[in-house]
Image (cartoon, rainbow over all chains, first blue to last red):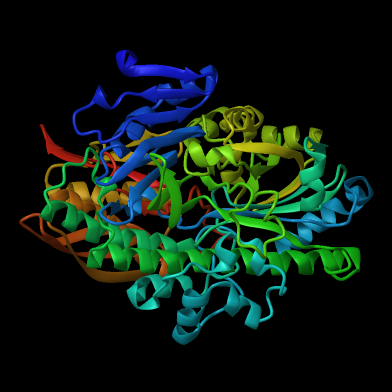
Length: 481
Length: 141
């Protein structure tokens, strides 16, 4: 590959489209030297190349600085296809459709809450269903499911799990257009009907954090963020419903790809024309799963606010527990972007990447319209997480996209071999981090050492102009799936 | 053959995979299923009070393997059970199969979860026959 690789700027590498026959566009990787070496070490770069084969892909197959080996798409991959005659690929979204993060503010000072931290994490643990395959406290009828899938946040609001002002601080205002429950299989609905408001397992979490650094005072003020503040980050997705939607449609797309004789380097990249019956059905079902995921994070927010009320003996409103923002990092969406100087409607796949709109791109009623979209970046449970803001210039880079987290560097089995549960608990205790987990044995897979340093990842995003740093957050209390 | 290796774990940065072995396709499918559930849980401690029969279709043997494993994940999640024993009762021209599978209701007091598998992917999916059959799959975790 070396002969086809070019470093185009301190934070950007390009793989020429002549590297492999069949690439329709070049590959572009945002990274510094060290992060690039990490991407080179596994199969992530080959996957960037594979994505460049997608019919209708425009500009480039992009990779964010937290790129690592995935399945089909790399994690950290961004690909836009022409909405008119391009293709859509369920593998470009993944199984956890609309997996994402949100951040809740509070008016509490972290230093004042320390004595109550343990109780708080325990209360969250008691209140929030978590762990593998766990069902939740809410059970929905088929009709309720249909309404939820079609309307997303509106349904949650009607049921009293949301505040009126939450909706405008969610990507797409908490409901993706074009969601059609008819396109979601019975099986997917069956898997989802009792999992709303559950965290799941793996890397999903609720984390109590302290704002330890503010880099951009002006933006932080608009975001309602200040040094020393206690905030809550929630990371979860569409649960079994999303997994089933993806499995169902990869099977469909696999047949389409065969029928059309598409030459794809990886079967997981199976795709269909956006305008075909199969492409439209997938989008309509995926939008339902996204609505479910956003509703899921909203119900988790409801239990979180409730837990704070119990511990601090004040209402969540009094505690100013407003939603800063909710953004997905596994999603395909239609957006207008500049391609070769002209505005083009594209279907943009973000697989382990976050939308990061700069000023004037959010809906006018958004409190962040003039300043840009908040981007929430979870790191690992020992080091840090970040709040970023979208930039103007990132429109000209990777379609207003940025990273989604730290990115794994160590496989789960390697983490299990190298790190003991007791050692990890001790390490976290020394750092003052309180942890509760659905399955202790799974905790080591999420050890800080298993991840790249998120600070390095966001520095590259900042340096490359994909998004700008606003604040740094330190973990205090962690609830893991 | 009873002592022959049934499967190996495959390392992946974010996810996990396995290579299953067998004297015939039926056996390799059964071993892949056992491998998958032993990633999820220590299945030695799982009983067999639950059983069900199922049928899976696909257009080729690789697709059939993915559909088979995803079907088992679906059964496991909606019934909140963990599966441990798999018997392929019929497999035709690599295109469809019927099977009977056994397991037990999950009881977190007795069963320790090792990992959650979201789905079986088509990424780097391979089935081939050398001395024995070999099937490779990667899971999304």
